[in-house]
Image 1 (spheres, rainbow, N blue to C red):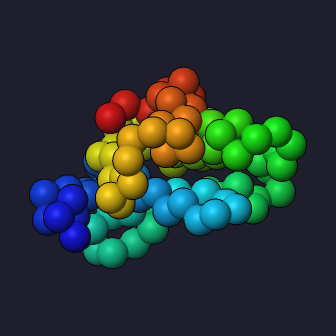
Image 2: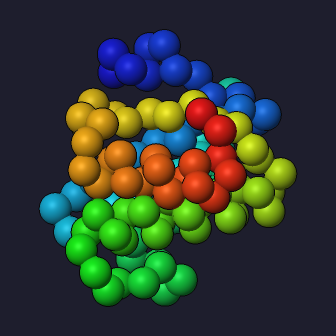
Length: 104
């Protein structure tokens, strides 16, 4: 809640929310003005490869998110790590999104 107090997503610059479970990683671009999810990707999707370590999967999720976001004409976002340390899978997801063309 401390992070979400300061981070508010808009349609032109949505919030990139990350959820990390023990097995999977999920991310979505959210417009907080209307409460709509614009783009959502997870490591459970069929498009994302399930091979490799969880860090490799998180990077693939970030790249897939960037591809879907550019298809929806979204280039910039605000990164909401949801209290997770910027380390490991969360960092890999952010790096994959940056490699895909997202700016935050």
